[in-house]
Length: 92
Image (cartoon, rainbow, N blue to C red):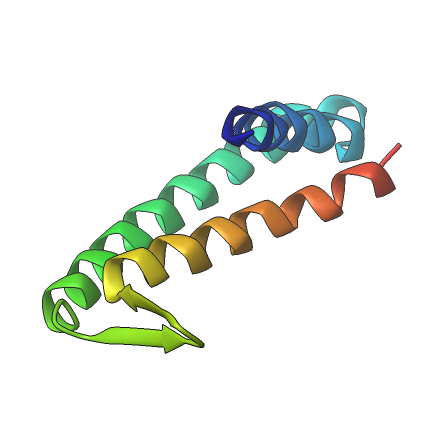
């Protein structure tokens, strides 16, 4: 199941970038896309590490379930990352 989402993001988003880029402007679009993605990936990794250090003892409860901060962080990040797949069918 997880590999389907991974392939959708890592194949679908660059394919969408190609479709949205105008003719000769494909290279600048790709360079901006990957530069910004990697910049925010680095920022997110840094902030995630800071949050993990700061909130490592925190737990969340949802009904009878109890989650550590790490599990909740990965769950929220996974859901947010998969929301991008919602936009892919709209680009033709």
